[in-house]
Amino acid sequence: MQINKAKQLFERLLSFTANAEQQMVDALPRFAEAAEHKSLRKAFENHLEETQGQLKRLEQAAENLEGIRLKQLKDVPLAALIEDSDAIIENTAPGPIRDFALIGAARKIEHYEIAAYRTLRSLAKELGYADLRALLKETLEEEQAADEKLKKLSNKKIELAND
Ligand SMILES: [Fe+2]
Image (tube, rainbow, N blue to C red):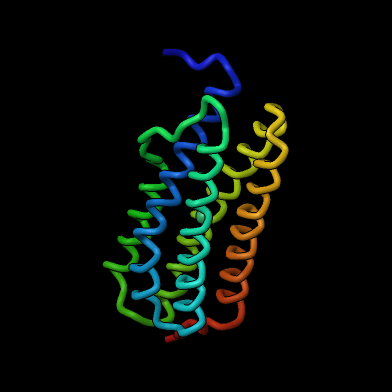
């Protein structure tokens, strides 16, 4: 079936994004465990908690919207980004280089999610879902804060070995 309505597109994007958050709920504990720097570990652990809340928000949104339900759709690009992060963990020893690389990989994921939430918010506006738009803003702000936190960690806290 071809998608020709904004509502169908919204349902599809909502489903992909919920799947993305679910994938992150599964992946973030691995990132936290792999991080050596305490602040980075903590950042991943905090974001795991937030991510669980973000997933609930999307599930709640689907329940509250007439004619919208979450479908089982795999967010393939996000799965690839997570694979990338797992490859970093596999190919580095614990320490600052791994932490730095992991921050870079996690920031790619945050930016991907930020783009997804921006699109969802635009569509929500189009569809007149004002409450949902506000709800999605909360998540968007969490993703932006997570990215900012990672940026600061890579700038200040992670000292790369120079030898
Ligand atoms: Fe998220």
